[in-house]
Amino acid sequence: MNVSMESNLESIMEELEIDSYVTRKKRVFVPRESVSPLKRATYRNIRQIHNILMFDDDPIFSKIAKRFADKKHLPLTSVETFEEFKRQWSHSTPDLVILDYDLEFDLLGPQIARLLGDTPVILISRKTRKESDDGHWSDNIRTFVHKKYGIPRLINEVHSVLGVRQEREFLKTSNLYSLDEYRARRRRAM
Picture 1 (cartoon, one colour):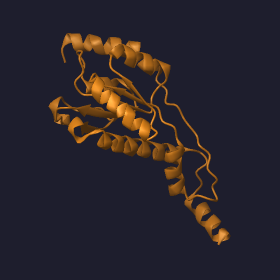
Picture 2 (cartoon, rainbow, N blue to C red):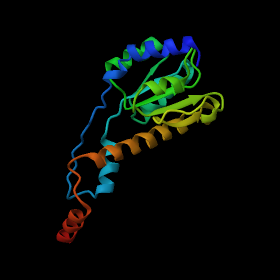
Picture 3 (tube, rainbow, N blue to C red):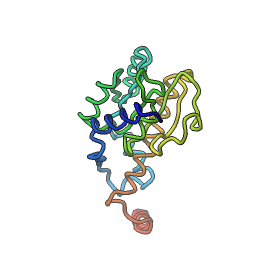
């Protein structure tokens, strides 16, 4: 990485206030008796409102993605410049970020993803990319979607990434009871 990219990375970290990054915890309450633990995780995915931020410098792709996401009831905020991205990030930390691999400034999508902490990232590009192209991608990059596969594929990946994240958060919550307790309740109900 050259000196200008290093300085850009440091300034971006400062502007995004990465040091003070905190993950929001959201809760949706579902009656325990009526829904099994696995179904409860799925139910939670359906009921959960997500905050998705898309940073792509291609305005046509962004507008089409926004329309398609609206039809699927996904609140997608699309930005085309880095200033808009910083403003949206400071306004509210998203649950998922969709980043274009090749942006019009000095940094690449994987470099920005590295700065976003544990926020899940989906990379998109018109060119085929591999992790080995520019070294190791950060752990928060969940997948890569080629733009030629279309927006339905991207939306499917969004659902997949958000579903996995919500299941992990659900399993961490304090109102998850043990499997033995679940079985005992099922026996009593029969």
